[in-house]
Image: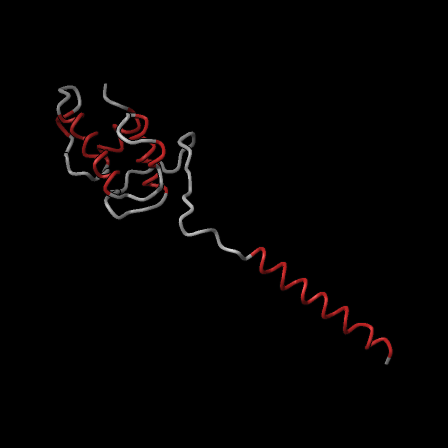
Length: 125
């Protein structure tokens, strides 16, 4: 019986330690903490339509392309296709539309589709 009395305090201490450790490891990041994405890697290689309200790797890849053409700031690469990204896509599409070497197949609609993906990746000319 003595053994069981000695283990109780130890078991209680282990439980308290495990709970404290769990509280430390399960603490969530602040809601206002922004994820920073680097444009030195490829996030997406497809051609799916990517538009306002979308999020994820397709958007990050489109944003990185827009950064490389000076249409978006690197700090704005957040994986969310919002108003800044849409305005940057429209500006990019406009610049292509009025370039006689590229513009015939470009729609200025603020949507990144197959033609816009092509020019984001390979440029014009």
